[in-house]
Amino acid sequence: MFPLSIFLKKLIKYGTLNIIDEKGKKHCFSGSPEPEITIRFHDKSLLWKIFLKPDLKAGEAYMEGSLTIEPPSTIYDFLSLITKNMEWRPDNPFHLMGGDPYSRLKGWFNQINWPGKSKQNVSHHYDLSYDLYDLFLDDTRQYSCAYFHDENDTLEQAQLNKMNLIAKKLLLKPEHDVLDIGCGWGGLGMHLNSASNANVTGVTLSEEQLKVAQKRSMNNKKVDFKLQDYRTITQKYDRIFSVGMFEHVGRKQYQSYFDKVYECLNDDGVALIHTIGRADGPGETDPWTKKYIFPGGYAPALSEIAPAIEKSGLYITDMEVLRLHYANTLKEWRIRVESNKENIIEMYDDNFLRMWEFYLASAECAFRNLGHVVFQFQLSKWQDNVPLTREYLLD
Image (cartoon, rainbow, N blue to C red; front, side, top):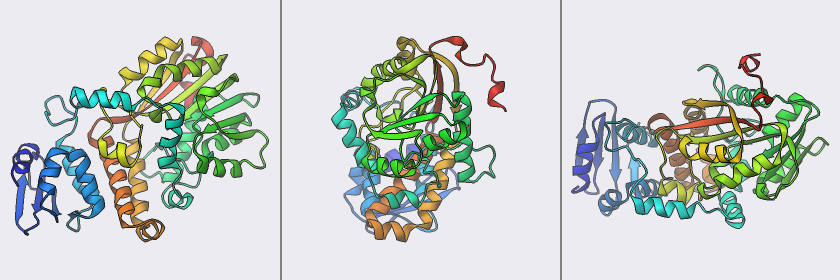
């Protein structure tokens, strides 16, 4: 197990991790008795692979089946134990604070999302089978953080809570022309139209999502969805919102993104930007997620977003930080995937299922232990375009 054992002895201060190597020998790394997780290596080469590139090779090994979790534990239990020992604390040397300068430099260049590359990146994830997303999302197909009023809320109720909160923050009226940047399958745009009778235009780079959105809006003349890059929009709108899309913009494009929001927003307009973010400062997308799930994706720190908003000329008229809401959303998705394993294997294969399990489990752990949050920014050109107190959100 050398040198991986030296690293794990220093890392594991909470819980117990048992590793059974390819020869059947058990190695124990313990900081406390509980929780106790046992994993098994089926390939001798994993010792060095995971030691040298843990944030890539552990996920790949689980996908390929050369790393397995001993029942009754799951991949979530394993990742929860590891990330708990890496959690964001000032005194924790194992918390990843952005990697080495070379990795950050590579990440910077990988964030240059030109229009053609952006479409390719979007297609990689969002053009997967329509049926796959039906297995774990709510009926409106909200593929972003829900808003749980309390622990008894179902996923469906929590997603409705989120949509209603956004409607309140946008202060919608029937005469408004509304732009949805990154409209997904159209569920949020349709809901906001239904709640306000406003005219909604949604743009996306996903051809598969567009098909669903257009089918949904077929009989609604006040809702229109298009295959279009937000950078090509020239029309002015009374309201602009974007939910779960900013993570795909790329750091090099932050200024042009908010400049475009300013350009397309009427003087008395209001915008709402909802994005995954980092409470622990700038970092990097881990290599496994970048390679297999969200190429070109990045969750920004507030210190990376705010300067671009300031330079664009937009006021931040309100900001809310959703903390464990996304962890709880991902938990609901993870449970639904677990109950639909056979369907997913039939749709794709065992490797894909394990990839999806690792994705949802690792994302949930990032929100529980590694400083990930969700930012909701309400933006406007003038200070008095929205009420000066927050009572209107409580109605």
